[in-house]
Amino acid sequence: MTRKLAVFWHKVQRWTTNCFACTPIDILAAEACLPPIDLLLAYKRRLASLRIMCSPPEINPAAARLPSSLRTPSPLRHGPDTRILCRGNPGSRLPLPWRQVRPALKNRTHLPLDALPHSMFFLLGPDGLAPLPVTSQHLLGESYPAPPLGRTYPQLKLLCKNRLMEEWELVAPDPPRYEYRPSLKPHPFMGLSKFDAGRLHQMRSGKSYLRAHPSWDDDGPPTCPSCAEAPESFEHAILHCSAQRPARIRHLQAITELGPDAPVWSSAALLGALTRFVRATATAFPPGMFYRPSSSASSISSRSSNVVSFGYFMSSRES
Image (cartoon, rainbow, N blue to C red; front, side, top):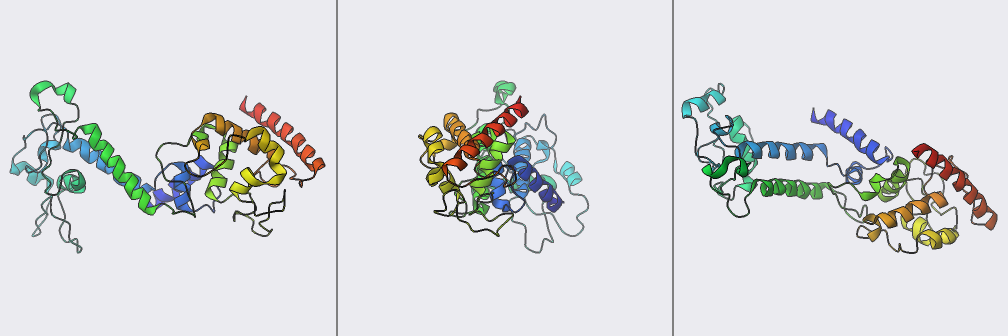
């Protein structure tokens, strides 16, 4: 089932970014700000487990059936006879204690409710006895003690989120293959139109209509068709192409880098300037969308007329 969900999840990521089908999955996830489905499901399970473990047993019946050695907000537990109801029919194999690691042969396993704290061992300390806070302290008054320092429910949820990011970093692509790091917060340029944001996603991912990016068509040379001086990479097309110097002087005087820490990715004004430059020069546009001329003066004027018609077309669509 997870494999089928992963196929659908990849389609969601491609729809979000407008990237090519040939874009690597790990890069696609980082561009879409959507972690891999297996890591996301594990994160959601941790949040559900944390909510049960931090719920008052007087209110949540599942919390009242957790192991008695687990330091939940209240020591209230139902007796061992009611915990047998959770065991099913184990036969001659007793369930594992919640602190014990599951063996490789998997002939013994934890009770369903014991598996919840076992999966959250990174929050419970080396001995599994770290105290847990209550979910809503302000709703329960003084009947429950105040949570220990640094152990509030929102802080534990943040630790679960940090755990997700750590696991994501382990499977994320490494530089120089892909320089931008994963994030759960959408990129600011994702608020642009689908077409404009798609140009940036494709160029950042290294799979675009630029000649130096291997993608749907690898027949032609990687040399920039506008200046014929260097391979048409993302950085060359935006910052160094001599044929685009007039447009660069007009739009990109404040943009000098495109790396992961560049100000352009966090500034609305710089993103607007970059978008206007991409539109004005038809950078990374589909080849059949507009004619892409050479670097002569007549070709630059014809490209400007194409961009005027494109700007009118995009403004009519957005309105």
